[in-house]
Image (cartoon, rainbow over all chains, first blue to last red; front, side):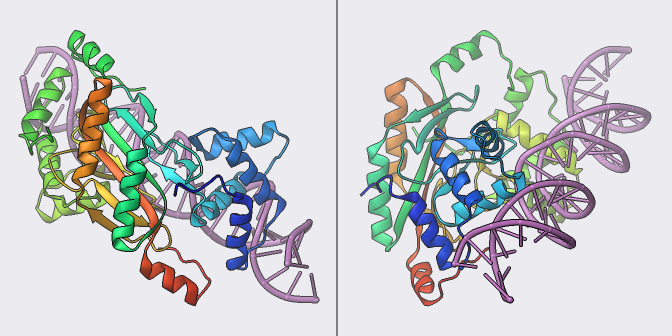
Amino acid sequence: MPPILAPLCAVFRRYLKSCSLRYTSERADVLAAVMDMDDLFDADSLLMSMRAEGKDVSKATVYRTLRLLQDAGIVTPFMLLDAKVTHYQLAYGRDPSDYMVCVQTGELIPLQCDEAVQLRERLAAQMGWTTVGHRFVIYGVSPAARSEDSRSGSSQRT
Amino acid sequence: MPPILAPLCAVFRRYLKSCSLRYTSERADVLAAVMDMDDLFDADSLLMSMRAEGKDVSKATVYRTLRLLQDAGIVTPFMLLDAKVTHYQLAYGRDPSDYMVCVQTGELIPLQCDEAVQLRERLAAQMGWTTVGHRFVIYGVSPAARSEDSRSGSSQRT
DNA sequence: GTCGGTGCAAATGCTTTGCATTGAT
DNA sequence: ATCAATGCAAAGCATTTGCACCGAC
């Protein structure tokens, strides 16, 4: 049920074709770079990693392609606490999609959580939906943050 | 275990005091307005609803207070597909925190999902965390979007 | 040959900040 | 009284867009 790391490239081409859009080398490069990113990334880090590989494209193209990938259901935006930029992640084909975030420190712990997948499939099926992914984020206070907290009553920010 | 719609105002005051910050009428107004918003909202709609109530504050204060509320764990940002602005929601004390989003149409369906709460509590306890909330978002394709899709092979936006 | 894509640079618009004034403690 | 908050207007800055040239189909 959890979709395999499918030929994303094929998925993308099919999507583009369905919209009569073109599959260009720039778009291929962006997709390849996305697949090489581990977990979360943003437009800027993506571009930097592309440049490191000698695949330079314009910032505008990165944004434009990222949007297409999002429309194609290949990546999804991910809300990071306090982030000023949009973060993305592969929509499926790779774990995790589940996180525990400390609201005090911003600490982010990836979770491996089959139950979330099961839950999502069950709920979706129940309503006749097809799923492409999910996100399960638990907000809380980590033990570390709590003890730190009792020591000094103050807050902090990156 | 799921935190009650506690005296959020008291929570806020306590938080402010702990940082030696002041509890002003503007901040009180913003908090009140936040509690009156149903579900998701953004800075701008919050301000407009405040103005409708005759509680005018500057945009800067809205943003500043929203950040404090976030630091205090009272609201959390919420990532909406394709949103250009930050959306917020009460971090706890009110349902739902679970959604199903159509990646084709943007359709957003709130879910009532106890299992998600149970799952979150179980996972958190397991790691010694205290939770303040969670977010469970299922990305998928709604039946409506799918049929629309097969009719016209095109994509759409907002 | 078409029509969409790309890069560049300029524009957009949410969000943040500096500063002088006002107000909570 | 003190020290932080507010409002205003001026940045900041990620993201989007217009346009002229290039390239996939």
